Length: 414
Image (cartoon, rainbow, N blue to C red; front, side, top):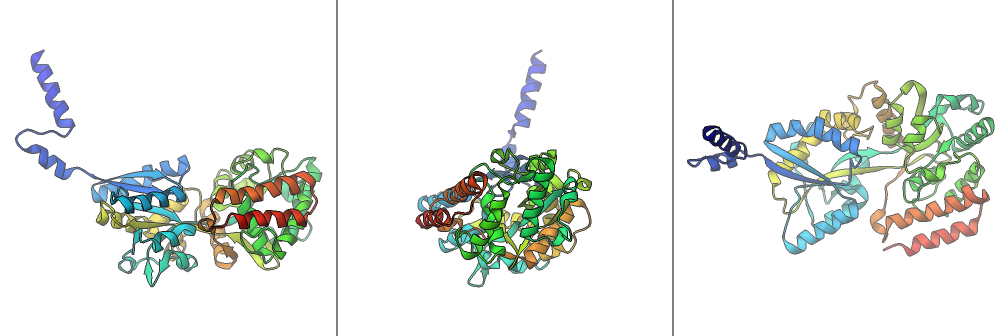
């Protein structure tokens, strides 16, 4: 028994990394380095799991590293960067930041320029260079771009207005279609996120752009024209629309048949049963296809504890082949790398991405100026309140309500 116990103790010591006769240092030298990545992107459990299962292991094997991925929204990410700069205690190796927040990171001196000239096998999308770069230097390597697309259940096609091309639909035709579905089915079948502070602002904001408005101005001439059209949809939205915090679930279940939403959310529904849906660019207005377009970017924080490993990680994650795998595996985010887009095939998820590329390259786009406001959630709420009162509520256009809403937005500016 004593011999068995001694053997078990020795095995325990060996598996916990302790070695006799000076072997401890040798094991420590070979121990993998932990790389801390703080991200506002890939927050859904399915997305994070995909990265841990399919992407990170390859990098870890190449570099004797362990990637520790944490989700943190843009505002607390920036606050933490400021705190680290003030205290001189740096804990994060890589950050993934939204485009709307990048100027503050660069101007604050919280990130280093990246050696992108050494990565000559990739060309980052020009659409985001205005925020990812400054003074001729690139501080963020863009990833996970997105625009808004339209998704329709095949059951809705019979209500499509005569002469309408789904792939080139206008907002007027979209609204008429939604109304016709509701009248034909006895209830609304169109989805948007009715739960406050979700994504309604982006769907409507894109529509306003297509009418010549600016984002997030809620009472511009273009926005007013769009709101007049939207009041027709009082009964076209699903009766349970105010419970939707994500349109993927009702679109997958068939509770709703029509929506305009974030391409990754559309991708999740579309690829679940491609034969059941038609996917297309967002509807167009007089100025073209409007869409809120976002992206995130990898960057190297000043003071990163594992600087060289962090650079290797950013280089790895933006390789064209890796970027395509990540885009496919996370629901259909658009890889903002020209060489990655060039290798897309004909799979359902590639179809989603290619529709997004079409909007990105040809649409009337706006980013999200979240950092210009004291609370972006409060900005979203202003849109949500107008939706609840003027669209779901009265169904009557109210310019005074929109002017008051714009005053609230102005009061929220920094």
